[in-house]
Length: 278
Image (cartoon, rainbow, N blue to C red; front, side, top):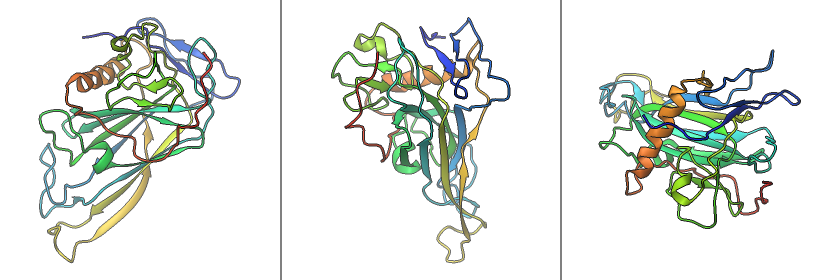
């Protein structure tokens, strides 16, 4: 399996807490005593299984299940500081998003900047699950993972980028969810990232709650809002999940045609982003 080169993750804990640098095959992440600052989150989505079955065969006409779009809202409630020589952008966090169908196939990925006190709003159907990338994937239901990091791709200048990589206006920085695209555009320094606390996300779900045809006027629907849940992430060797996320995302980037890309919806205005300290 392809290995990441010069990727760094560090836990940014509470103010004044020590930062622990992490490098594949070398170190581990040790949170400060009594401090938990999650930077990896997960949630399910279900947008059509009350009418059409999912990839794994759940649902279909006459079943309970998802019955319409889900809205994802991501906020940045922190102001991350990373000392030179690593890159930061006045507290901007990259929400690295990975969208799977319900047979565990990654179908889309994207890196979305979220500025301090900023909010991004995304449609599951129109932004996250629309542009599937593998085998005409079934996107009726699945899992969304979000990894929060600092910006990780310093651009050498105005260059064309695949749709999976979100940029921070004219700042010269971008969010690469594969952590590996840099060498293809001449970034030889490596793509440095710190795990960034402060990001939180919620999803609005609409479901049919009784097994009747979706066209029935008697369909019972319910709408709920739930928060993405923090999940354990492998911050020590062998970094299996981190490597898999990056490699599968890079496959989607290199698959051609712009497929396999989610998009960042609406929200932050990066046109006034300040230049980064390097």
